[in-house]
Image 1 (cartoon, rainbow, N blue to C red):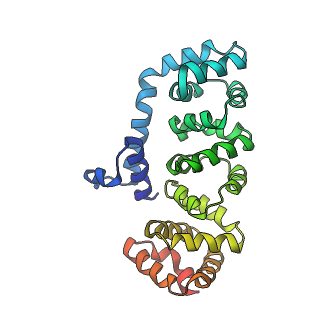
Image 2 (image 1 turned 45 degrees about the vertical axis):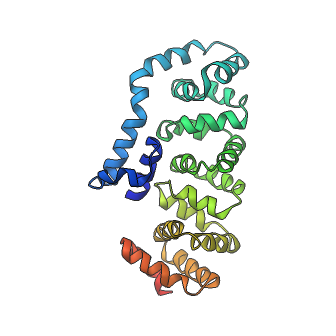
Image 3 (image 1 turned 90 degrees about the horizontal axis):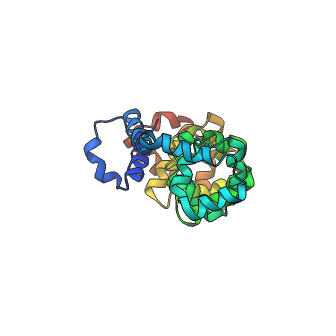
Amino acid sequence: MDRNTELRRLAQALHKSADDLAYLDKLDAVALQKLRTNFQNSLLNKFGPVFERIAGAGKLAPDSISATLCTKVFGPAITANMSYFTPMSKAVSLCKLFDADFMAEVAREQIPERAVDMLAELPVEQLKKVTAKLVEHGDFHVLGGFTDYIPEKKAIEIMEVIKDPAANLHISFYAQRKDRIAKLANMLNDQKLLELIAAAFADENLMVEVGLITAEMDDKAQVRMAKLTDKVNKTYRGIAKAKAEGLGYADRMKAYFAA
């Protein structure tokens, strides 16, 4: 688990910058994750029974009426909290009646760990529309949180709507499962990876991110990344090595540096 990723996710949840949380420097990644999930669940733990009753009252109402109540009366925050107590078939039916803007607003309010079943059941076309809307507004932290839990097959399809290679890296910036990102990245063709590498080395933070992703790849994939990096700029691997050694993950990129 990457501590810096978890720190960024906690900072987003608290509407702070990572620098504002310097006083938490003694907490490791696991402790930071626990702090974040406790904070995100605090409202739900306190008012869960209320959200459950509201969701229960709408079980028998026609979907069109329930959808109107969500968009016109409850709003995205309450809708997000009710979603955890709504039968999945009902939730999926309602989502089909929401436009991408409202779905994106709901996604911003949801706790990814509690939305696993919904991510598995929602049609991928709907997820694509929400993804495009969140990318448009730069909500990479929201997408990064969901990336850890979305089914892999859907994640591959959703990547198609993210045209900006830097956007993919910004999303990964907030995703804890770098191994999943590495697997998805390895499925890209050479041209897409060249664009990804070029975008990464244009931003120091993204350069670290692509390093962490590469560190999760097997030797064959790392050699491929090394050759593509040299195609972009032969000085980049030396820069990446210095950064990786400074941050302590160079030992997991031996194949990349040795190629």
